[in-house]
Image 1: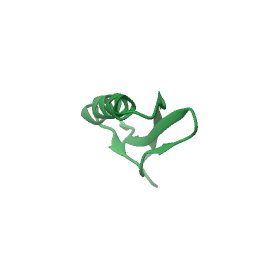
Image 2: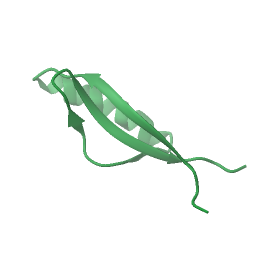
Image 3: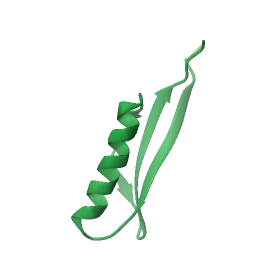
Image 4: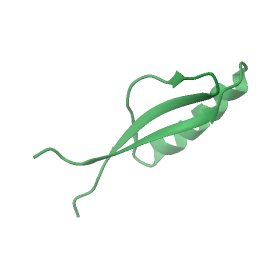
Length: 60
């Protein structure tokens, strides 16, 4: 049986400036420090920028 995982998407409003990337980086780093791992590359729509992440769910 595979270990269950938690899946989340970090999202920030997309603007064509460095602030969007900084904000996404800050939020992703917060998740990384709490045990999440990156899942794929960042992606964006016309209005939002996203990063998918996963974290193993503890079986305790």
